[in-house]
Image (cartoon, rainbow, N blue to C red; front, top):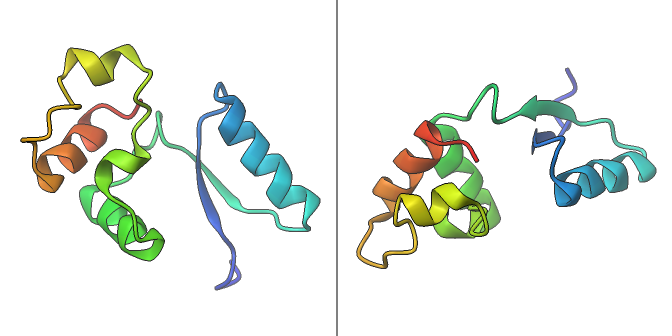
Length: 92
């Protein structure tokens, strides 16, 4: 694999994810595709992605999903580590 090949954590049922994949392909890139619901990233992989993106853990979460509210992930008292752990266990 080329060292510059992008990886996309993809959800084929998500219109934004499908749109991102289509955009990459339109621009001539064929990314490595990982269905994160089947093969969720590890906590270390999520931390690495967040660092590269300059984002917070909650920024990667799908806040409209039922599991987000069921697990109380909107609680501001939750730490970054707790949110990342929730993503590893519940790849929604």
